[in-house]
Image 1: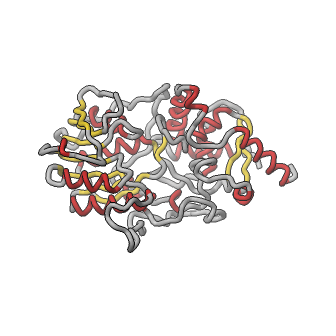
Image 2: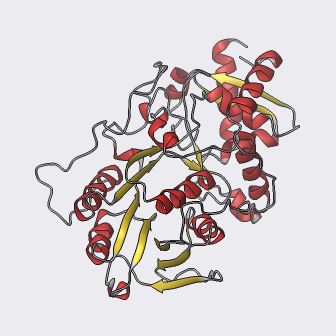
Image 3: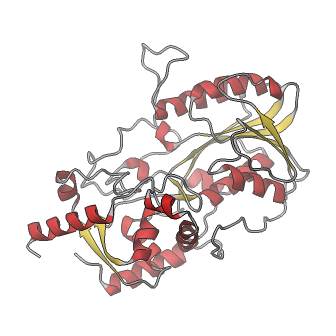
Length: 383
């Protein structure tokens, strides 16, 4: 069915009001807004493991703007240099002796995909760093891979919080074995807590989105809606879903390091429940292109072997990991810019990308595939 004008106005208004925390202007490649001053006292010495990937640059910019001394450790593959930042070169799969006898107030570990990297870094830093902040993932929670197994279930409240069961190694596991992503994050969390008892902060983001996102898992939607026409909208409009703008995430991480806040936190958003319809209509609100949403049932999409999370990104029907409790993070200072800001800035950033890169986005279905599915669904429904 097509979204009515009344529904659009109702939801767009709710999104604009309910999710509004801080406005921001669009730019071809958005940069961080001037940061509020560091109110926690003296400047901190921060070591950022990474710093040149998706969430690294804004972490560095924000920390600098708030007066902190920043050192980054990378493999040196990026030529990016930032004034005022000390750059150490090392591979986390190898020798970390470059860290030597240095001292830092906090380390922000934002790029560890492999728990074995964390094994090396906590060993190198446990006696020279006050706080170890590890960016984990909600994928550390023990749930099946995202798919259609929860289709038809609409979650009215979160059923996962920071105390929910995480993945644990099987009995056959040996330290050093390669493991799946979610288990790797859970093992890494354990390593950090063990090496930094009472001095560990674990941040578990959900789907990180916004300008410069290399995965395109959210980018697909505002870009597709901005193109206009008939848009295939998946499943039940009331399914819960969550995202977090990388700028909100990274700026909060820096503030946690400033205050020395410890503990485990889920970090996705917004603060209140958002539905798939609200997300799509919120993206629609920032463009003037004529758009018609056609909601196609998940039973039909499953029959057509449409891949959740990739062909229709940022969508997993009834999946508990798309509605995770974030109240502990909100109480610890996590705030959210408007969905409109994120969608608008993502569209503008995408338009500035090279044409070849835009033609081969990392997620989302082709327009031909979308048209084929819409035609098939209309034929099935007798429309």
